[in-house]
Length: 323
Ligand SMILES: CC(C)=CCC/C(C)=C/CC/C(C)=C/CC/C(C)=C/COP(=O)(O)OP(=O)(O)O
Ligand SMILES: [Mg+2]
Image 1 (cartoon, rainbow, N blue to C red):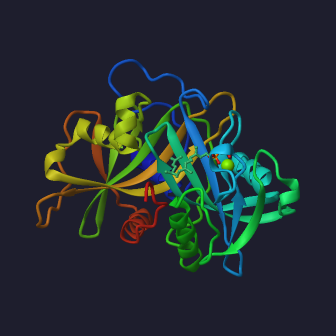
Image 2 (spheres, rainbow, N blue to C red):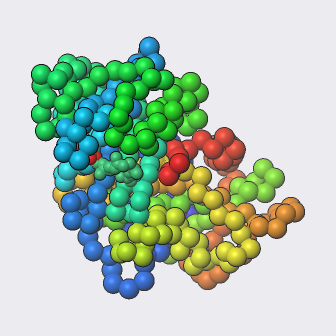
């Protein structure tokens, strides 16, 4: 039964769906974290990359005083009560005049758990491109530019990498289409699919308090956890059950993203694929020993899950985080 429940949970996470977060297996020491609130202690930014069939990119000309006249991708801060997709659609409408649908998440970037940017590949579904006659506080205008000949000045050069990522995805999709799942979450947290691989066998780390489950680690919003970034929360959980100094831990990227944004549930859950390997070379047939009672390794026997995991691991078939 336990393994059936785990297999279902893993299948759901691998399919980009996930499930509600009810509790977490690791949290920062000290006071319980303050409730997650947009505009108070977290800021989420949405950004859209549109690539036309003619290999043109949709850009907007900024109206804000500090970057007025410069060009950027349509982007902006999420408002309380919005879903991630609603925020994306609002920002694109306000800044570019277009209606849109997200195709897939392309990248997630964070500067500590309180500053997270969700980057989407999107396609226009209607509306009218904003011209300079409609200039307002949101933008001065929007226009399509050849991908290899963007206008100057750009507001910031970080978008060059994002445009490249979109073009690569269009040419050869590294990961399946991944869209935010509308599931409420009270925390900024990560659900780990932490794997150890030997030959063609995969083990997955499991939380054993209550029903066996994929472990969840809460990100603190205090200055220390901000500096460490979201990786710190992953390492904290692994540190609680593994001896990390003889291991190499790599966060491969995202399998999915959960958020709702209604009823003051401003948290997010990132479902992350992580690898754990021994630092010293040589064949190690068994995963590293787990300390304590709260975690254990689950040897994945279900053939389809095992092959899906190996394929996602070998192809780095995940949404990049901070790259
Ligand atoms: C926000 C995160 C995690 C990463 C930013 C990545 C970097 C360094 C970007 C380069 C500098 C830059 C353009 C920073 C602006 C970030 C920000 C506050 C975006 C919010 O979007 P705006 O377009 O300013 O907001 P509105 O459209 O809501 O006014
Ligand atoms: Mg903006």
